[in-house]
Image 1 (cartoon, one colour):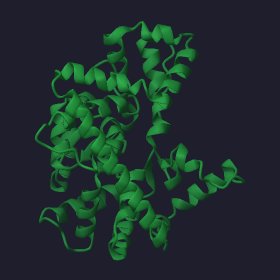
Image 2: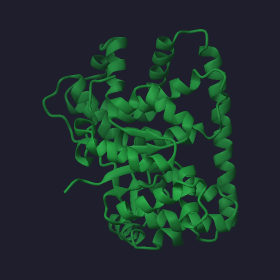
Image 3: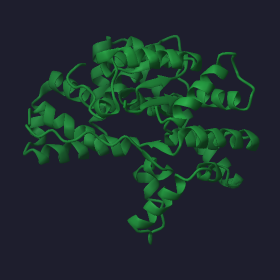
Length: 344
């Protein structure tokens, strides 16, 4: 029996799926795609995991009826599957990349990216808001409850309008600040060639406290120091980041976006990229808007990670069938936990 294939749908395609589910397809072919997914999801041949960004964007919608309909489809088609938070995936990726970079014989396991329950996808910041008296068992009980049919729908439709409006404003403000900062940064970088632009992006990662802490821990685990890491030089450090799948995807998609000089940075770009950094290297297929589908193909990310990419739900059955027939190109769930290394 083949292992299930994980498919990422961006928020718009979840909305299209919800419209088809309600009998009002956005496009004629969406009804057939819906029927395909009903069969495949119910057989557990295909899994449609949710990220926290999906839930955040759902919370963003003003219309309560729309939120209710989308929550029902999230519940029906995700079947409780979630994607781990980026900050929970990165430590294991960095441990692996450090071991591979220095040729250590014991390469740690790849991160657990997919799991059951809403709380599986809650990152460190989210867990910090849990009541102080909660034990691990308390959190696990709540997570098991969240896997029950209908529980996700109930959770997403809890009435809390004042909190929703406040959260929406915070999300919009962050997107606006990010877009403005990126426009200023890429204007400064515009005179320089692409290779220098990439290295500037990678140097920026070394200013991130969380990433630096994880690198230090990983180096210490194999008896190396930060001096050893810096001694790798520019080429060695670039190769290191290419071995950290989510950061590699972040770098390449950010670089691609920033060098589309005629396209203004959009406020939602920060959330789009935050989803794709995990979806592209770990899912078997991604269904995203046309700009990002083109970016994933043209940067070589689709080829490197063996990920099928499309911009239309109607294409999904065909690309999954092709991927299944593709022999070496078809990645099972097991191999997807170990993204291929050393191919930048």
